[in-house]
Length: 221
Image 1 (cartoon, one colour):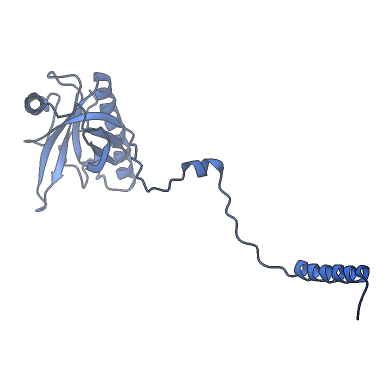
Image 2: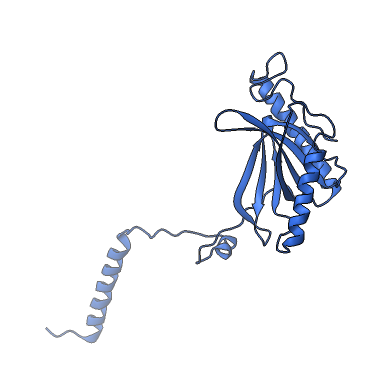
């Protein structure tokens, strides 16, 4: 049956309205949209990368260690060991110009001292040596060979449960930094001693499970 153009147009409009109403009533789940802050987008990278972790502490040159005798340490007890380590290091630097001035970062925390190793570019390698504060019998920043040297005597426990006293030494970038390290070590020792005393690990005689009874306390001088 033939219909005028006006009627066909009106019928088409009615069908479109019906379809639009049906589409409007169907509630499809919306896709999840993740919002990123502009700063976060700028920091994102398509290429994986590793960020070097920074450590709080002082840049030092590790001079090495030497085993010393005795368990009771007084002022000047590290001098001869430090002189030997100092001379050995100076000789090594003279024969090898590739040795950097600073090869580590010494970080002193309560309960633990960490020596982070640096590569030739002065960046951390991830390797480090750790020293338990409770096993440090003595430390000092007072040396005639150089005022920049900081040394500590560490009670190293061997695999057979015997122990030895090792003198470790580092060269700091200044005399002031060596003194600051000694002061930080003293504060770390106090916190460690207080914690061990609170936990009952310090005996009435003043000794503990970590310290020999005749061991000296760290010296900040």
